[in-house]
Image (cartoon, rainbow, N blue to C red; front, side):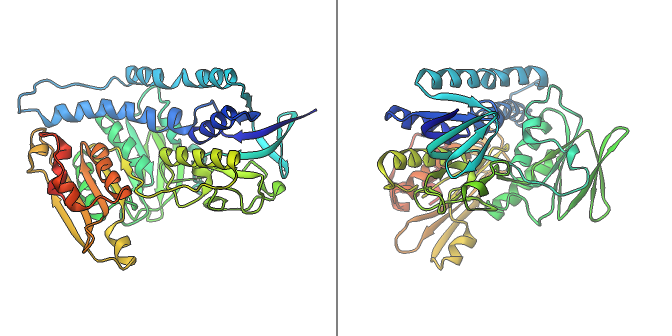
Length: 446
């Protein structure tokens, strides 16, 4: 028996949830399906549980920085207790979401969905037809293509560790590796990051990345650059990571931090005539498949100009829901999308880097300074803080802002507002800020 719906959403993360709820609220018959617990990567296996662990690591870091400045004693992380606390954020949402979706009249399904024609899905032993089908399956770790890849743990595995191993090796120098390395280091682990490029965190400002790398190495984290991992082998004491240069690194756990790719391999997209590439499903400005008008895509799985972040997925979900309900009339606006590496200190960016602004032929001034001597850094004894702000000549538009510091993830939002709503450097200077607060430093950055 074939079951028919107005909308079927594959993937119940932040993009899929927004689409399902909005189309159902408008009276559409809606079904959702996921092979994983409802909630998606951010809520269950990424941003939210990670930030819980970061919070504990921040306590350790703050106390260490203030030793000799009025703080005595030494706190420690009890990993088991911390993971129990983390689970209070991740254990209940899947059931709560299923209950909430069902209560609103959405059909909730579990399993692997596969296309069998342009608008028909096979899920287990059942067949489902959707007038519109939305693909919101997110991303998964990029295949490493190395011998022993099966021994490499994922970021999801790290966030489920009951005990923290003594020796960790991260493959790749992206935000996952750096964030988890900073957490594990504060929890007492010996940590190594192996990155094949000549600098890590390649999407962020080079000068601030260099400062963060220095801070990372001062913690005792071994950051190895221009090192290509070729194999992972089991040993009597754990694992051995081998490189093209013949280097060997011993580890109790090896963790994948070398990027993610759209999770589309098992959908049988070809049977639905859906065009896709390495960046995901190829869509038009309305997030509709360019080759199958019944299909939309949102979030990390869609090949768009949006970076793979939860707020982008939410935005794209809202756009897709609108276009399904009202016809293609809305596109996503990615202007001023910020990104943050939640290391300690945190690294944030919004807008253009110097290289990007130069490539576009823009004329701009660069305000760049290391700020450990500023009050906002000195009061908590932070050694590695700084900023870089790009201001267009003539217009005073903020072209890009890059921050390194404990509160970078919050202060960057002021620059997001400036870029998205065309506030100038003079506008920011004239603003009266709370003092003393980290955001009040903005008037000295522009």
